Image (cartoon, rainbow, N blue to C red):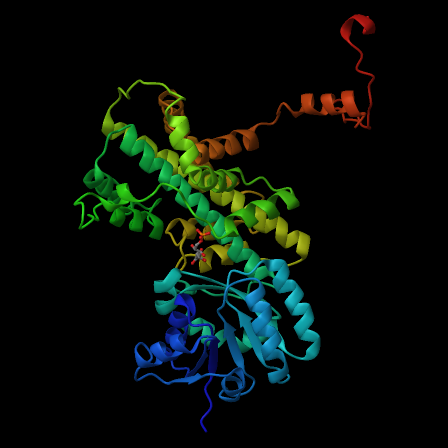
Length: 475
Ligand code: 6PG
């Protein structure tokens, strides 16, 4: 029997498409799915005429693969991954490689690596971004684990990944759970981008009064610019003109304004808090999804809590340009936070992440792909130990040039009662980061007052505690 080169377990949307991508690139595939129906449908339809072999037991699936076996697991993150690994483990031989391509929690990946590698099996935790289309035609891949396992797989990964001007959108990320960590932060940044775009839409629609045709035109135009050209702006432009066939209205206006989330944005925030890295734009994005989901409560509150009633009295064209500048400045701050988080995680866990490479492999294939990532890549090429992207000459100058517009948009939003949590959080991040003195001297004094937590002084060395007695008594 001829053996297949690459195995895929799990034929949901991502698994099915990535399997076809691997096969199209010249690697015969073996597939297995827990329910037989899906496998039958896949083989009868999309895998027709392809070099694909289906199995209906894991034993047959494993036996259909050449050694060392390369098995990509594309099942739901969490317990299903452990279940598949548990079933595969006794069937595999030394040197075989399991790759988890789901959105797994990075500590689970660390645990699984520690569990499997001493047995002689090899394990990679790989972030895969790009949705259905990316999986089929070229995703961005973020593989983490032992480097020798990566080297073994790199010829396949390099072929199936998205290709951009400076190579395939894949690189060895680092050991252990680093690949899944980087993918998680990618998703946190994705949440930030999506929220910033949603706020721009809200302002353009409800302050500037643009209709769906005009919204389409503005986003389509922004997508041609060096700064904002990106997959998310492109799909936003495409969403507005879509007319619902039943009602003949723009479909987006009929979509329930309650956002879902599978958890990677929340994880980004949780790990950032644990590592002590501020990511306020991403926090605002997660919170905005949460508050949007309180639809019933918001409907009830909207009948009781009124806001300001004024109208914007400036020029529409000028306002649109200011929103564009506010969006871009906020986006820079959001990426600065995400990259700072990767920098801290890399130092904390000794991952040796190459931040410029992260930006490079996000240039194509993934959800946050954008021309802007080339600027980030260049910023790290100029200075690999850049503490914060805000200090890179290009980004610094952009913000300095555009901050007036950014502030003005946020002031208009506040005046008219339009929430812009991610725009504001980004500006607060910028203003906090750029200020030599913040008011936390008072926080320290309070902590020392009520809890004797001690403080340091700016005028002399040492650690101090004061009995902060009321003024009259201290006289
Ligand atoms: C990607 C995406 C993907 C993610 C979805 C949904 O990079 O292809 O990030 O991995 O699962 O976008 O995420 P939420 O349901 O959390 O919005």
